[in-house]
Length: 209
Image (cartoon, rainbow, N blue to C red):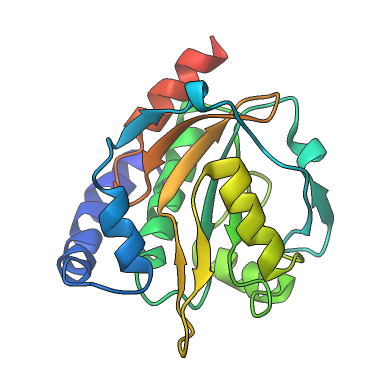
């Protein structure tokens, strides 16, 4: 399905969840509300952020490291399959971005790091990806690290937090999408709850020029 058709359908599908999410005051929603104070599209080049070394498993059980992603730009986010709140918008928006990248012929990888690695096995992530029409040749889902490791990666690479909430299956995490250059530098971030992929598409095109 093309991005243009998804855009019209997505506006209808997203309206109801958006209304529901506006009343969230805890869990994932808490971090979302604090992050919304920033611009939807934010230049991170001055922060000198670089993806920290990591080793993970993708949805097929293959080992993926940060070095495997060098050489081409890629886009990252952080979600988890049991997320009761913001991931239910972020993942559909990442899917719309996938369609838009395909329509534009842009060879850019997409990486979703789970923040719930204990539950989100490769098998669980593969099913989650299939349910969200992920093209695994472009969009990979990563797990296989510890909760401490993903928390450290979130802080060092993206200046955001990953924090399980006491007495709950919910996990506090950021809602941004990140553009990483071919050298592993985090250069821009975007509001992952914004369904319009065009700002990312425009930046990718400008960067690839």
